[in-house]
Length: 257
Ligand code: ADP
Image (tube, rainbow, N blue to C red; front, side):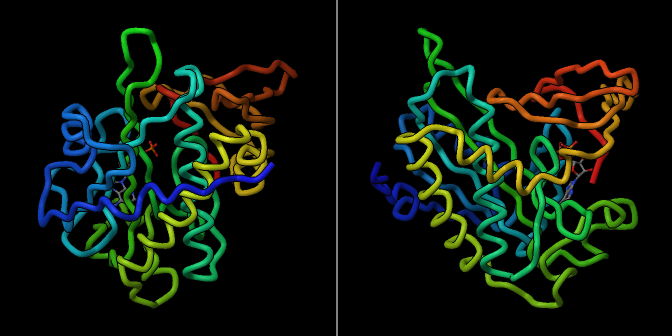
C-alpha cells in the first residue's frame, strides 16, 4: 500500500519569546479551532510541565520547547500510541542530526547515554461521542543545556545534545528533522496502523528485557522484567514468581535504563 505523506506540520509554526507552557498555549489554540499541524514554539517556558504536574526546566535558548496540535481519527482507547509514535519520531530525528544512539524509556522519555534528553507530554480533549477531538503533544529537547543550566540535582539524570557531543546544534535544524520524521510516521499510522511503529518503538526501547521497578508516587509497588508493551501502551512486567502484571500508561513511573 502506498503511503501518502501529508506535510501537515511545516507551514503553521507559531514562535513565541516566552510562554508559561507551550502545551497550555496549544490547548487554548486547539480549543479555538486551530487546524491540525499547528506548532507552537517558545524560546523559554516559565512553567513547562512534565507528567503528573512535575516541572520541566526550559530556559531561554537552551532547548527546543514546542507543542503540536493533532486531530487524529483514531479511537480514544489508542491515544497512548500518539506518545509512542512521537517518541519514535524524536529518536529517528535526533539520530539523523547527531549520529548518536538514542533510546526510549517507557513511556515518554528519550534517553542519551542513560540520561533524559527529551520528554514528551500528550494531552487530549475528547468529543461527546468519546472520540478524540484534539490532542496536544508537547516535546522538550535539551539542545544546549549545560551542567549549570541543569543544576546539581538534575544533572544526575538529564543530559543535552551539547553535553553529549560538544556540538551546539541549531534549534531550527532539530525542529525540521523532527517535523519530517513525524509527518512520515503520522501518515503511516493513519493509513497502515500501529504495527510497524510499535516494532520501531520496541527496537529503540531501553526498558524491554530489563529489570524495572514500578513506582506509584515514589512508593515501589512491583518489580520484575519488562517483557512487552501492548497496543494501549501498557507495559507487561513479569515478577520473580512468574506472574505478569500490566501497568497503565498514565500514573506510574519506572526505574530502568
Ligand atoms: P518522568 O516521566 O520521568 O517521571 P516527566 O515526564 O514527568 O518525568 O518529566 C518531569 C521530570 O523531568 C521532572 O520531575 C524532573 O525530574 C525532570 N526534568 C525537568 N526538566 C528537565 C529537563 N530539561 N531535562 C531532563 N529532565 C528534566
